[in-house]
Image 1 (cartoon, rainbow over the protein chains, first blue to last red):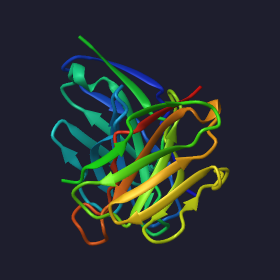
Image 2 (image 1 turned 135 degrees about the horizontal axis):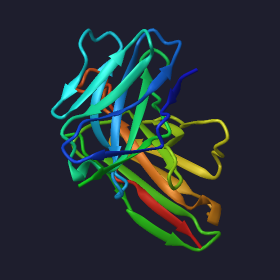
Image 3 (image 1 turned 60 degrees about the horizontal axis):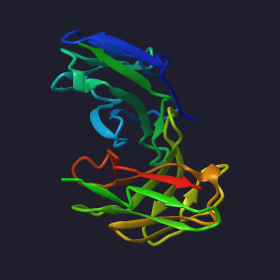
Length: 115
Length: 119
């Protein structure tokens, strides 16, 4: 079974500061992918970053980086230099590459950037 | 590339009517599309996986006779909420995967969602 846990229902960060959003996962699949999505109030799901379980290096995409610690089964999202437009819900998701196509989502973290 | 559209974006209907939501991949072909449901301040819950040319696979607890899914082509899947009731009011989001071997075929590309309100 796949499970994604996000323990921070809400986070606040000062504009221009960095923030880390936590995500832990559990899976029996030896090969899997981890994703982060941003969902603003409009509802659309915006892809941010992807990490494959066999990737040697942590993924980075602009101001987003993924702190992947495989042994601890964690895939935290780091947003550097926060901007007001970063205020949104953030979802961590996992897909087992050998156990079907489904994505399993965490419960989300609401991020508020304070000016 | 990899744009997914949904229509309508918002619908209000009376209890007992049926509502059809379309999900289209605009610039790529998708053998697999997914339908999610999201209640306010909650996560996305997978309802069903839709494969082109075959029957959808429904998640446990999702009534297949109530939520009819048709995946008629590689670019279109539809979700019909039959005999809708107020408890069906929710945000419905579809997503699509590219064909295996295409760039970024690991990802799901999401539509903008459809907000359904049943009076």
